[in-house]
Length: 235
Image (tube, rainbow, N blue to C red):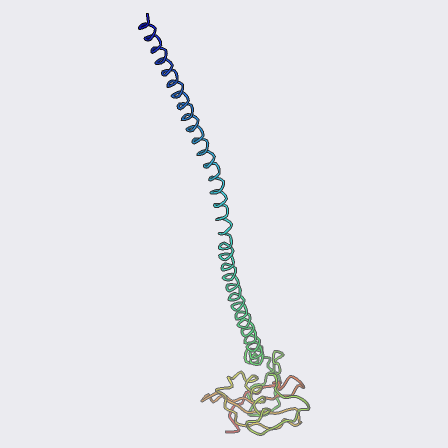
């Protein structure tokens, strides 16, 4: 009896120990499970916290990049400004060139007007009765050759003077001869202080002309009549 009682008592103790062990293991399992769950949740939380930071840093990086963009835009604006400056200088040069060309054209037109006498339509008129005159003609197309003189005009027969040179130009215009190849044989007063007569020929050409010119105030000398001579009476 006593032995059976002891065996039962031992079994009870063993069962009790088993029950305690099972309880402890269960508690450990719960603790481990809770730890794993908390660890996973912490990882997600950290990840979620890190991502906004990365986004913020990325956005911050973008903000930092903006000044660089501004610098590029500034460089571009500087290049545009330099380009505009160069374009302005080119435009100014073109305008100056255009103005120079216009001045040259105006001068050429003035010279052309002065030389139009050679191309002007000539009208033959009755002569003075001089036996050495082959033909006499005039033209409405003849114009004053212009002048550099100002103030009251005084006719000058001094060779090389401004007035002399302008008379030579008018005589060449009336005769239709290039002034550079014209030979001025004689230049004299035409009977008044505002008229003159010149005898000229061109180069080695024996054809000789007697040209009558008159002074137009503010405009210069103008051819009014030309006589083609049979022989050069001033040679």
